[in-house]
Length: 412
Image (cartoon, rainbow, N blue to C red):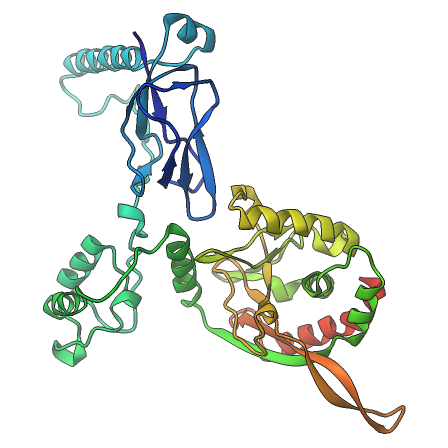
């Protein structure tokens, strides 16, 4: 009986692997075509692996908790000849025959071409293969830090999947305080018995993004903003937009008035945005996802409300598509929902700006109209920016424009 593999699919352009988190089939069970049989987790979402045709499960090769590269065989199905003919799927037997023919042709080609290592008529430039990381750990990028790391030490770090930030807690005994391999091994032995937990793909993705972000000179400025008019306007609407959406709209409009603020530096060029697509940070289990809302400067609050609700729901269920998280020029994060009155958000590596909204606080504010202090709700607006592209004055003016737009919520 023909055998058809259950393969780890290509889950996105930049995704080379995924971790199996649940297996819903067992040997001997029957499956239909396009049936979701295995759930896997990437750095951004959970997705289902489906079958290509009807059949009976012969063997499950995948193990829950293990990470597999795209194209890996996760299981095997016994199928009928009729099903193969109906669906056109490639069986393991057919694939083996194809490889045998190709190898034979390659051998014959090699015998004909005895004088040259490369046949110019048939040479094809091969692209480098994307190697999956080991057990979900990010592949070391080898970015040099401020202190010297010997080739021997760097080779050991690469073997273990470690970055320079990972050894910051290790005290160095080498020349000039250099961390040696012996220092690293001693430190790892020291913490061997400490309580620990496995870092999820989500946590590793966040850590990797923050490491790359921090290679730039980042700066943060803030200013208070009155929210009373926004709160009054929000109370008159049904459904009521969240404060995040008001800030998102004001941010997009302010950036459209000065696109240079959201440009990013590439060599000697500042590249400006072609669309004002802005991400929103959504807290999920063990990390943060940033779905991107498109053309925010041209959308109304009511339009944003529906799109935002759908994006947040899919983010929390880990059902975002790769295109839902790409192409943002900036991000908004509302950490005020956790009662925080100040913070220093860090922009994503591919973005120049991130705007944070802190919790609103009732404060006495002087009113020239009544010549007395009156209660008002204020919150801090905080922007962190790439100081190579934006200066403190420019960031301050950007916050000023955002604050002005928030005083006219009916125009958002």
